[in-house]
Length: 356
Length: 274
Image (cartoon, rainbow over all chains, first blue to last red; front, side):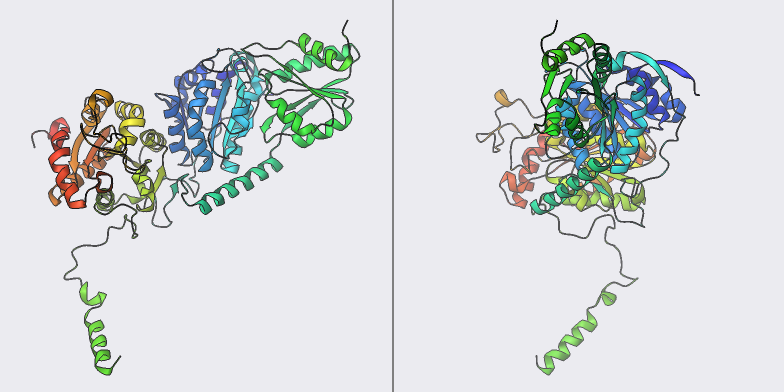
């Protein structure tokens, strides 16, 4: 078994980027994710030759990613909520031009400048678009520091498999907390140029150009149809989720990221009181595991969705369940993390009747 | 067609054929390989076509087509990748120099240039322009300054002259309200990261040759890893200046060039004595 290390989420993710053979990181400081940039500036360049550059803004960093991703290299950026908002135009370009890259949002409370405490308030931005036009990111939602590590390689793999930007949607708590992790082996940096990359045109091929401009409506529709076809394929092939104690569960807690772990504790407390509770955790929040949730709705009495926002993913849960059973919601905002006890209380209140 | 005409036709085609016209003895010029043989969308008399051509000629002369990546802006030259036979990326408005930075940083041995208009480079992209220059990115920025927004139909640009009319300054640019034109070339020349900074034009053969030399310098300094080269090309915009091409060039000389004087603004120290 490989050595276990105690690492902070952001630093573990940064280390995973070096180990994944990332070719370039471009980013701008913002709490609670600045450790990623800080960690990479220590010795990433020395270890693998990886480029690490502090940009003058998130707008600049996402456009550096746009340029660099066009060369077919493994590149990434990270930010937190307000910074991600600034990046949305660039992300839309990247999605339309079908460039692979890895984005990380260590979400903090909003709206506005908000708070630096953890939140899941950027769910809509992450999975419903964020920027302009019809596009989708593949969105991974880690719930442990170990997954913060694992999703880096997975993210790059998916990005290149689908030529699509991949977003790791995590939060300030996971970014800042320390947990034990197992790090993967060092992978080489990119060695081959994809045939679509802008690396300099040899005589042997036509020029490559990267654009999201398709001025003729017919052409623009074609591009959209092509993207939508790709998204349907992603929805078929890339759904990931985790079920915990769902086999006999009458009530299922649905949560992503860190909150799912709190739900585990709440489920355990409920079981101790004789209430059969399970936990369903989407790992990909796009593509979303609608079918699996719909199946679970045939067995359960009700779902309770728990989020650190005003109720965002709950809309997808309701879409999945399609009215079969009640879907209740518990949300905490402003950087407050729900406790297992309050989840249990809500669960009893909604599904078990009057609490003692 | 009668017999006489047929004979004449035959005779004519025998005399005037490609082989007859172009022989090894009289061939002095070949089509610029890096410029794609197609019709450009630019208006008659526009300077973009010449500027594209010059970049293409320099790439051909240096033999670096397979090592050059260009970045097109948003603006009239948004379709530059349709005309240049090189790998290119079309960047979001104002962000061409950031995209160029990304490309260059992950491929430091390739030649990278951005090609940007005044609105792109000196309004929405001012931040990226200044910081790309300040970092001394080892790239070439070609800055096309025609004092107006072309693609969107003639609105005020950061470089629109005082008193100059545009669709958003219909009474002429009032500097009390809109501020003065931004001489961004002089501004970035102050930055240590900028190795070479010059202002040229493409309105007559002499200036065209000078502009080409400047672009050539930019690529050569990049080869030598000297830092950022910045070549401004002052051009006309007949359509949005609402003039014919000839008048627009006269107007440019009389109005634009006194405000944006041609010549080197920053040259490498060793070359100053030349």
